[in-house]
Image (cartoon, rainbow, N blue to C red):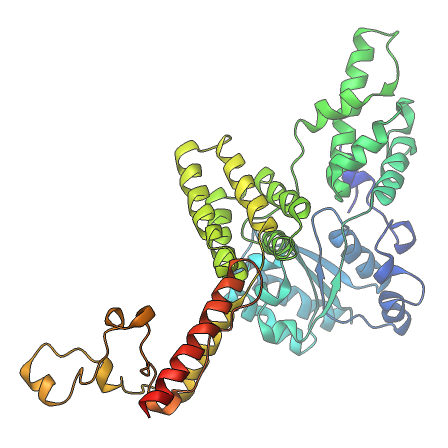
Length: 443
């Protein structure tokens, strides 16, 4: 794409060759996958998966040039199946008249639904064009299986601060496409701040740099004695507010909630609070987090600390009462409590054990002595016969079976020796001894 001095800085500084790309060494380094592909003269269909500003579109354009293929850019946000048909016709014409292949680049391919993805699947299969799809979402969830199986997935990582520093300094110094002719420079700590605010996104960093440069040049226009240095304050003014990389319905959403859950499970309050506030500061619905904490209280703590469930429900109620921003502190309190509580997944495992047994054994009958007998007929059928009322027995313990005969020896709940559950374990073991003696005496 041809650029002009009026084009955004990020577009003007777009790399024109693989050698100019900064970062992504895992796929672009010597002897890595892409070098091997290009060396063989063939390029398979690709899915480029990575956060914004990591070079997906740039890489697709460079690959198209390296193979001399006709490049077609297509936005899944702005176009639909009708436009795909036109591209198919153009690709057929290119192949017939010029014997030239077509690289069909689809930006934000995850925006296409199943039917839309199906529309160009046959053309990928027959080789009419090489598909390169760019997505910020996990392809496993967003790309249909038949298409995904015909594409190689390349994962692009967020750019490191070192990578971003190189890109931004290059843009400031470049006299042709960059800002080199302005004689601007970074004050102390400005570049460090800018790479932090860019958050792994080169486009975001370059856009912020361009705005900061405009601020400084405007100041100099009104005051010729003003410095040419871009200060941290200029960077902050340009950035306005850090927009953390996050998508409430996408892959990063699930990555962050997973990190929170696992930090809680590992009893790390610092890590747990970090991931909590990463989500809150990025705009996550606090009630979603509250629901996950309630689930965690049962799944990973359970009866090792029965107060955990009460704390999480209180946390949700407190947030309902306070709202934002005050309600965040109640959620943080619950997170710190859960991280610090003894852990047990005994209830979670008991659920799995019970459900697995039910799936294997089906609808086993309720033992007669446990059945309710509100009618005469039911009593005649021995419903409720020989039922022993626990409160009439010593220690409120009775020696009677509570599972169907086919599985009466099964045990589903295995308490741990952690927290309050240790008392439960000890209590249940003592009860078993008492009941065993009563059964022996009854026999």
